[in-house]
Length: 240
Image (cartoon, rainbow, N blue to C red; front, side, top):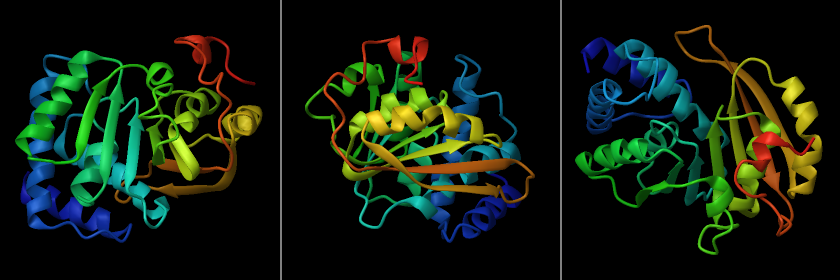
């Protein structure tokens, strides 16, 4: 990573109260190199220029730390894609136990390459669908925090993610500029699945006018056993 972008990463993270060490800069740099290399073989991201990756992927990913409840130990990143925000979260806070879940096996191979090369421990990349894994005893209502970065509409995301979150834990939805319509539509799903909206915060990323929202949903009661519904159903027939 060129020095200008290293400083950009450090400064951007500092805007969210995060200190990035030189060792962590090196991990992010290797991550970027592998992202570009693998992106030529499989579709991981449309954003490839280093400065843009630093701002729109790395800094955006670590913005989630402001909303991470104190004492968070276990995190699941659903629909992680190229590993955002899960891998940057792990790089920044090594004590986190992170699960990356994605339905495309090629992406899992990429994630495992990044994990292995950077010698990241207590982080696993799983190939599968949220609808299936949320029914497994070892994953259901197991995590302190579930996170997703603009993977689907909020009603659909709630059905994917709230079943993974323990009572007292949180679902953190990372969204773009327009969220009110999604929030209005998601009210029924949030209630049915055992959650309640705790906070909605609007902000812009450092060094970029890109508008972002964080929606923080607290898990206040158990998700009924019939959810999530079988594969494909949450997307085709959201709980509206």
